[in-house]
Image: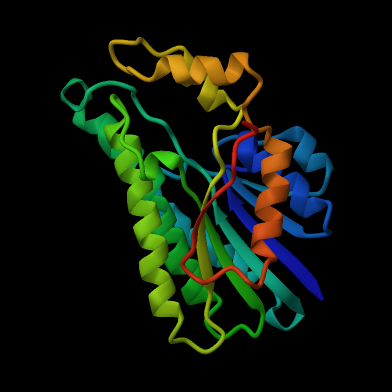
Length: 246
């Protein structure tokens, strides 16, 4: 029997760490990402190059992926909605509408569409099925200059809980949870540390986390997410957080 992971944004950062954890546990992995990672290609990861802000293409790609899988041979299948963007760090009145829309498409609309298609395409599969949405502590705590990011991640958490209620009534339904990975040492964090204090008042906290070596690393977070996915005690609709080092 085969175990399958479909992940968005798997070419780098947290997504790369997640892929490493699932590869170590013999998963067949399909990554949908804006960029291709040659290292992952050499490890047998199937990579589909797609800018997920083009949300009309998501259903097409997922339908194609599912058409290549045999449901009688898949023991479990997981979708991880990992791709996301911080967007422009600034007060909302200083961000153009087109920039706001692009962030909403990637952070909120893309996970909604991919979850919808995943549930629809796997509806009659006997496999164990799960969706993990990669959230953020910013879904619960507002930050100056992050109105778009905070809003889209909060929407992701509520989406998780609402879909879970729907799936609880379905025989062999999909288990869906959200996981905030903590503050992780990624390109996004580098981008945050380069913000202007006038646009992002909490920058000193993030500079201190880096200086103190308190950032989570992508490989550790990937392993944590793998363990969460395989923990039967976690309730459908749970919104969880990976703790930082300090």
